[in-house]
Length: 434
Image (cartoon, rainbow, N blue to C red):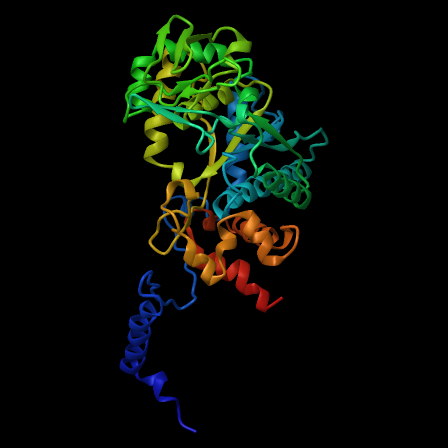
């Protein structure tokens, strides 16, 4: 039997594929579906971070933590190149949806990195003949419970006010997050703690950091909020049953260490940030929170802090909102001289167009309906992933965990994005092989 003519006739194949592409939208003309094709091959070309860290990401981070201790004068150059302080890997979440694939990848990265870090330190200690105690490694997941509850805010005279989860009560999705964290902690052997915004703003260095920020609120407002030009610091109205907070800080007034906020129902109320109990009530938008958190981590003399966040926060976002104001702070205060935050960026999960898979809050109604048709809506939330496998959620999450683990084994894979179509093959199509 001779070779199939289709294998040798590019024009015939092109015509067939073109016909399929033209036919598929007609299946549902009111909400058309479009066909695309790929060869199933995965490329991991080197460049930038993937070139620099193609063989190792854990070692350079450990070395940077040791260098921090040297900068602080806390160790001699003769000591083994191992950190001496506990290491905390941080990640965060807004509890306004069941965690989708992007969030799950961030969590898996945090726990996997912590596991690899423990293993690397053990090997380094053994190779160096070091018999001392190695620092503990843990994961801390912060619930950004100051995120707004959908449908609970109001707009008055064009000014937006919100009510946050910290006053409205636990999110409906809290159990999903804890289920995920318990699985990852068990598989990695790494303990975790859950923290909230009040825990973060109760830190010992926070009052002094806030005093610095208030003293430069005009400059920092322009830097951290290009749209509004003012610091987006908030505090919920203290009147029982109210809890409204002005979202963007447009009406805030500043005097010394005191911020005065305005409630549309009950008028002005104030917080003195030099008082720790009052500082714990502060809320901040993402850029301001990012800066305050980084300052507090750099001042932490008891632990090393490493953050894992989505790759969509890398690049210009950090250069403008974090590193420029951090450099000005260090120059003005002589604090954390020579130190910068330790941040790892998880690969972004993207759709066919290259846009990141997002919470429904940021996309139009029904944007991901097709994923249900294709059987991939489990990527939109842990709850749907659990339903897909008809279990406690462990099977789908385990497949994501193993995929992220493979990235740590081959770190060049950490410096790229991954498509929904790619994860479809990793998570769902492997069912056919199991």
